[in-house]
Every structure is written in C-alpha cells, then in structure tokens.
Amino acid sequence: MRKLLILLIIMGSCISYSDEYSKKISVFDDKIKNHFPGKPSKYYTLSIYGDVEHDVTTILLLNKYDQKEYNILRDSLKKLSKISYKPSDSCLLVVNMYTDETNWFKTFKTKNTAYLNKECLKDKLPIPNFWSLNFKTNNIAKLPNDYNIYVFDASHDTINKKYLSYNVYMPDYWKHGYSKGVAMNDKTHEIIYWFVLW
Image (cartoon, rainbow, N blue to C red; front, side, top):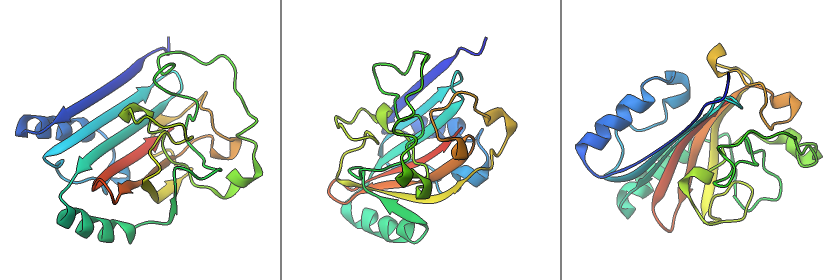
C-alpha cells in the first residue's frame, strides 16, 4: 500500500533543534538543498511535508532575522533568482495546489483540471504550496501577500527515482520534477527557504 502521510513541523530556538534540522535535511541531494543555510536562525520553523500517496516532498524552513542580517541575505539571495512571483498573482503553478490543512491526510479521488489547463501556466515555474506554515490567507500559494517568491531552479529532472510521482495535481508537462528557491518578507524580515520534489 502506498498510503503514508508525513507532516513534521519543528519550531525551535536552541542548539538541539538546530541539530535536528541538520539531520532532517541531510537525506536530500545537495543539488536541491544547496541554497539552505548550514543551520537555522535563532527563531525558525521547519516544515517537512511528505505525501507518499501523491509522491510530493516539500521542505520549508522559515527563518526570522534582524533587519541588518535580513538585508544582507536578501540582496545576495535575489541574485540567485531566475524569476520572482507575488503570492497574489492570478496565475501561479503551485505543486499540489489543492492541499491544505483540511485535506492533507486524504487521498483525492478526482482531479480538477480547469485551473491546470490555463494557458498562462505554460510559462510559469513551479513553486511549493506553503499551507503547512499555517498562514491565514486565501491565495493559491497559501502565503501572505507581503512575501516575494524567488525561484532559483526548476527542472523536469527527478533527481532520484524515489521521488517519482504518480498522482500529482500538476499539468502533464510538469508531471515530474523539482523546484527550489526562497520567499522573503521585507516587513517581518523572514526568509522561507524551500524545495519541492514530485
């Protein structure tokens, strides 16, 4: 049976949690996690969402920084970006866009393809669904509009066959792949490091 769901959220502010963070992301290939910091900030949230039924793995690390450190990191990270999006954009290609806190543990029986067939999606790079960080927002990315989303890399390469997906809510031309980047909030000085595999 391919029915297993994993949701791990770690919130920490001490060295033991930092060690736990390192262990959790060490299992992933460097190619998809090389933009992640070596250790989290003093105040951080780590969300690891694995949905084996739909074969999606999403890692979200939300770090909170003081303004000076944030500005330095923001400027250097923006240089790595291929493209940027706003959560409020009307056309975003979100991996498993229908998943949220009410249904993440369920198997979807039908696939709503109306949105996935939109012409505007053909030029978009995939981004993760940020639902597991519990932001209260109604946009498709489930991320507050104060954030900017930056995609560093996205590819149809599956990295490893163990990440192959069979029932992901994505257009056929993005049936398999990975994407990585950050989301940054200039008001709260937060950076979300992310990658998603499907």
